Amino acid sequence: MIKRYFINNLYLILIIISIKTFGQYPFSNKVIVGAKQTNLYIPILKNKNVAIIVNQSSVIDNTHLIDSLLSVNIKIKKIFCPEHGFRGVADAGKLINNNIDTKTGLPIISLYGKHKKPTKEDLKDIDIIIFDIQDVGVRFYTYISTLHYVMESCAENSIPIIIMDRPNPNGYYIDGPVLDTSIAKSFIGMHPVPLVYGMTIGEYALMINGEKWLKNKIQCDISVITCKNYNHNTIYKLPIKPSPNLPNMLSIILYPSLGLFEGTIMSIGRGTDFPFQVFGHPKLQKTDFTFTPKSKVGATNPKYKNTICYGFDLRNISLSSFIDKKEIQLNFLIKSYKSLKRKNNFFNNYFYRLAGTKTLQQQIEKGLSEFEIRKSWQNDINNFKKIRKKYLLYTDFNLY
Image (cartoon, rainbow, N blue to C red; front, side, top):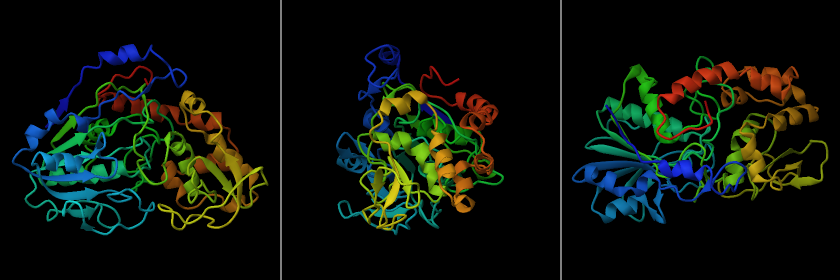
């Protein structure tokens, strides 16, 4: 059973032709996220045992969702958290141990590492689950994989789930190769979607359910609390960084492009104050810009720690120029590959999982242009758009 809470979005028709802060797109701080609309879900939670999947982004204004629910006597029994932990400061890929929240005394169960999926024991005596995590709309960002496993557990244990929807800051375009599940399926890519898929986490949940991508094609009981004053043309500035190495909007907008460098010998600035806003390598042809990764919160052992990297600083390029292109910037990757002499080991065994296919690496190694590579994605993207359209909850003016 799928229940959807639809919001009147007539305001969005006006905002599309209003003040345009970033190129042709409105920059909106008027969005009302799902969690803030307490009247739509508090009555459902009354007298139920609730489990909640959250992190540091799960706030209503300046109040964490957990504190908000406890203040009205909702019975939260357990907290589950994704990669980076409940406070959102752990390194990417770091194992998070279960613990107790010092403020509330509630047990915190990590859904990362070997324990990615809530077990039947984890969900014992739980009546309903809330999922409220800010996503960034990129396939290899693991919160949607956590969503998949939570939904699967809900379906297997007949527990309904409420998705508190939040805007997708990269929801204004679709681009990148569609993941080949026969060779590249992993926790950083579980579904046959493009690298940038143009959906909120609520829409994505409906797609997982509707396309029967859960194990044994089971489906779960979903309710989505939709955002107000939002559509897929809205550029939404996140009020809280979604993970330790995405500190601002520029890093979030560049993440789909620079994230691919994680599968190469290049550094994308982890261990600096500007991760995902620069890229470089100690043996790149000497440039005017250098950076030196250091041990920091969220990047305790960064690539090329304490080593000078030569590279490129993207912070001086206007954010609107990246937004207006509405595509992954492949030239960063192509030019870096051509510049480094160590071409034989430029890519590592992780790259094809990030790309979702082995084809992209082969295309770059063969010297194909960005235009030729992008053209090879189009049929798969067009087929995905037909699937995506069935699950949209928000007006979509330019993505068909």
